[in-house]
Image 1: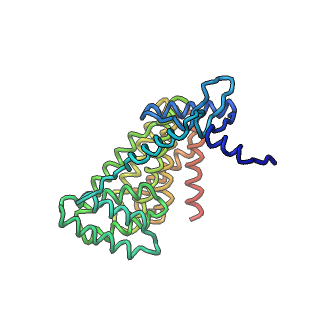
Image 2 (image 1 turned 90 degrees about the vertical axis):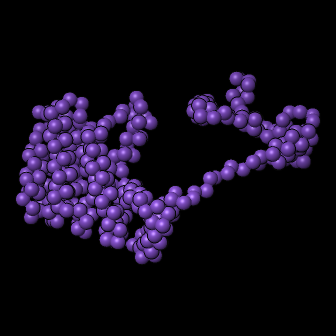
Image 3 (image 1 turned 135 degrees about the vertical axis):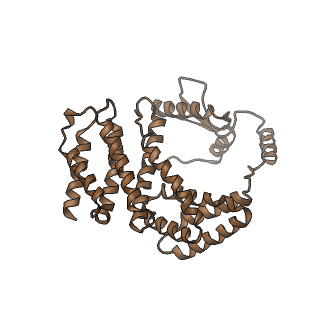
Length: 317
């Protein structure tokens, strides 16, 4: 093990030290640096690649100068003149909505009652501030439910209870249902090799849509959404699937819509199996499960197996 003496420490403090990085690491660092510089100038005074291409290392710490004392004065002046970032404080409606979102994010089966009381308090504050803004509460709940399908039933029960106290919440929820159905037609595929950012963005949207599908299913189970509305949504999904499987280059879209259809069928079959329209939907599922992927323009074997999975699950219930 190498032992450092006082002279070694002084040399490191005032002159710094160099470390040679592998070429692969340098490539990654340079790539990240270019991406950061695209948004804002990057200060690189403390850690920068050496200009000497042969060394391909990094220089850390002190500057190789005889007047280190002056450097310390300059550094101290820079510290004194540094101004902390001031975060704008939310006020009025924005603050109240933020408080409501905070409660929604914290809520669980264990603290449901206390967080609900907090939400009710903030809603009353909102009504005093501007009663026309209450529609944003249902939007906030819709957004949070779309990011957390594990608490979906909790959010469903909460919306039902809040709507009984504030009927306007359910009125605005109808508009959100329309937006959900419209989102089905906007499902598209992004190739990660050609546009990775769009691919990641699509994945987030798809995950959110599946979380909302779960949320809507739970709202139907507890009686907040009627059977008719859910059947309309499921038929909308099937309509897109039947159209897309006959259209070129829609394989990924069919698979994604199928994932949402799977959630509705599995979660709601016991609840809706006595509805005549639901029996027609199950017949459609059976027909798609019998299809051969090679005979359709945009029906993958993976999608067909998913429909088979749906039928297998229904048999066990």
